[in-house]
Length: 352
Image (cartoon, rainbow, N blue to C red; front, side, top):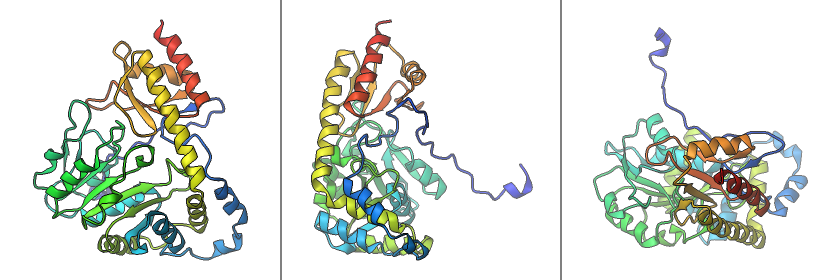
């Protein structure tokens, strides 16, 4: 090691899913929405006055904050926005997880959590999921410096009930509990319903999945006015102008079309449930995913082998070479046409 390297902060970075740019491919590896965003989003982009780009955007992002507050029937002071939910979660880690006690999150979960913890020098402890990949709420009653978990979980897709989440909150009134709801629109009830009862609850969501705006990077959080104020204090100490004007306009436009939003969600859920039936016929084993993906394993074909075979056919799914899940594939729900191509390949491959 060179002398100047001694004081460099070194971390093992988060590894996102592949982003191939092939013309002929089916991309089912990053849980993107297979349908375009609401028509009003494109209209907002065409109507945007480019001359405004010479000006800084509103650091308060008031137009988007107000639209979210109206949509979810909250006060603007209960809403925080950022550049994707990753930005929101990173700000939350930086703001709320400053105890010498470990932050708790599942052993199988969103793989950015341990990266942020390592980067920010936050102690943490992984709490094992049970044999069905479910969270055991009683396991979160140990001393800790905060709690974070996705619901539905990623990459398993398992949904926990509001009663299970409330049990965790009741055991942890003296720390911040973050529920990461990137996939909540595809099934289940949001922990938003518990917000009035628990001042230490932060609920994080995103436009990337259900609103088909992964390329715009819009994330947001709901919490008590006290929590949101603390988050904004850290945000404005880090980077005041986090969201650009075009993104703010697109986000507001997406929120206005509730009918299109519900229709798209319904299409994805319908395809997901059909795929569960088809995958069972092929012998795959999986849980009852309530997200926009399935987490599957096959008793006769190793996941890594299937992952590579699919890739050769320009069908991309996600494989995690990690303990307990290294024989599973996470498969995003695409259009019916895309899923039929996948099924045709699997039927032929499994007959070999």
